[in-house]
Length: 393
Ligand SMILES: *Cc1c(COP(=O)(O)O)cnc(C)c1O
Image 1 (spheres, rainbow, N blue to C red):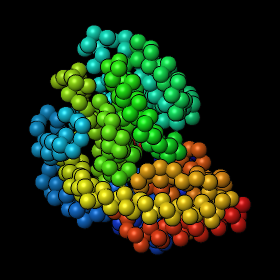
Image 2: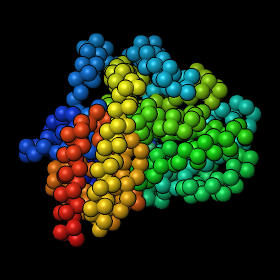
Image 3: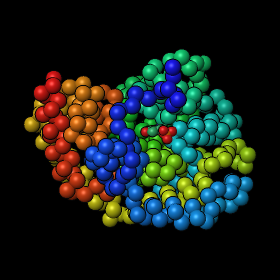
Image 4: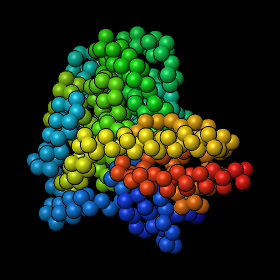
């Protein structure tokens, strides 16, 4: 008999009942050090007092009205995001998937309004992940996600990761209207697109007016050590998808865009019942008040350096278990030689949460305000995890 929860996840036998900072308490009392942060969602850890206050204050005042009316917190959040980024305008969603939906619609509408409906093709990359809607799985193209769900939304051109020639060739297609890419692939195994690649992509897009859409759902909101990962490169997108960390655990996402890229999205062309509601926006504003501070981001980079250095040490001391450190900032991956599932299970035994990704990589995505002591503790637990995995191998 099917479980009352649709069994689309293989769940670990863990039941967390309480969280505080980087720590999760299991129902049986064990305290786990959380390097997953709900897959890069709990940007400020669990139960951060500033976020709890923002949420409860808003909960006592107003939960939901509708986008039929002005929402002051939504306006304030949009103003702040516009101030801090390349963007001129924002639309709020409830998830990264919904942000992908709008980014794709926005690109197509842009070309339609320009009288070039034929430019509906969007270039995407192997290993990418943009969500689980029909459009988002079609965008990624991975058979693991698309098999059995056809017919898929047409118009996506899937290219191998890091193949410059294939990209240059695909850009010659006059029907291409946009490029959609993650600056750092998360689900794909913490694969970073190097700065020169992203800059080159920007230049290639500029040459043909092609829209550059960045998916910063996982790598954005301070995770890379900049508010958004593309800031390291100097190249900016036309459209950007954000979610995960922006709400610190409250479900909210956003599409940020330039005025030009958003020019087709006039009244009535898109909507959301919940998107940008007062609760979500109050929490996201509180997250941004902390993560948007340059001093906070510098601390992320400094602590990321400590974690990375420690991980390099673990690769050196456990060469049969770990192979390579990947990623930027506090979006790090350890490519494993042992099967990734075994490493994740061994970590659970050491009361440590890590998240698997493709390419046999474990992801380390701790809260951005993780302390130095917690980093050392994480490294010792990972060290013991590796020893344990070596014993059972
Ligand atoms: C998680 C993720 C998404 C989808 O976000 P949801 O909130 O799960 O819908 C899209 N893109 C990237 C890069 C992600 O990591």
